[in-house]
Length: 291
Image (tube, rainbow, N blue to C red; front, side):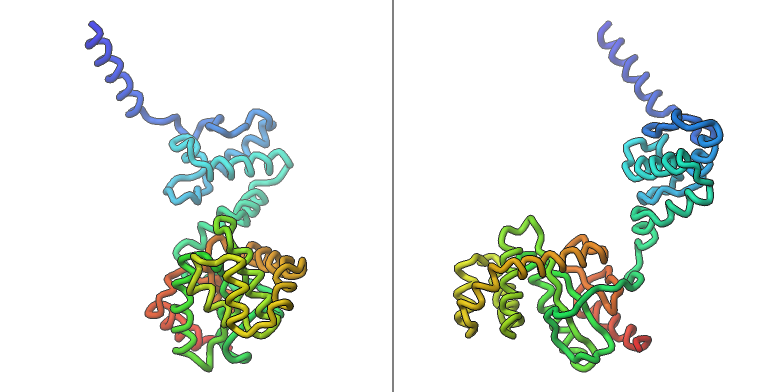
């Protein structure tokens, strides 16, 4: 009897799994979407937007469809809440659509597959740099001294600079990640060395020994590189140096940095491999259009 009951329950579960979801095209309630607080007119506005706006999570569904057929999708739920809030505020369908188009989730979706994004302004005054000041291509790198991918990027970007010694300039911006215990210390140390004109020598030393970075080693490297160690130590521990690192972090977040290394070519975020065989041809193409 128990076997028969188990088989019956299994069959019933299969039927439920195969049963079509409620018709999202006509449904007036959607999982995870609070529509009851809206007036009928506001509900109509919200549902109109939800039924004809694509979900940017990567699926081929519209927002309402995604809420019904994939209720676990956080992207559609977040955007649905934005739609409801807009409707509750008295926004029109057109206004809500415009607000959705400007949302980070929608922008990220529109940027998928692009190698270079639209240019953004990134402050670089006083940042460490190498290459001709009047180079037609400026690479801005946001990096972390303990990131293994950043370690690899040192040689990759050096290869680009060697390929275009007259046309490419590189600017370094700090982006130490919390997950790397000595990254913030290394960032401050590099700026303390920069104050004495030795940023790049200490940069190379720390990336070559990224796993060994600690305060004792940094002070030893500073001495070996000929830095004025008392002056270096004072700068390393100065609040102004920490503030400079924090500014770089804020600049990176504002520009859309969410991982290291991240580079920008003339302000355009690059979404691709840093392998020289990939990056060098891209630089060549950019040089044809760079002013």
